[in-house]
Length: 90
Image (cartoon, helix red, strand yellow):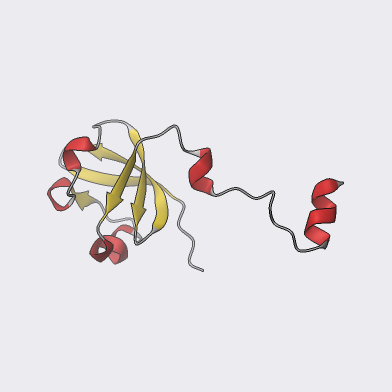
């Protein structure tokens, strides 16, 4: 009932950012120029990532680029691959 009331008044205070739900995962921040590449799902060479040594291999990580949570990715070999795309164009 409380959520219905909040929605009725335009109060979206009950919504939480998706990244908060995934806070238990490490994160990887890509430089902005990689945005058009990563949002199409193309793998990123780890050499293009400044903090690549901080990206654990074989573990899921939150991937951010251009100030946005893009999705969940995993470093496999020499590539960061997006496993689950979360980014939605506004």
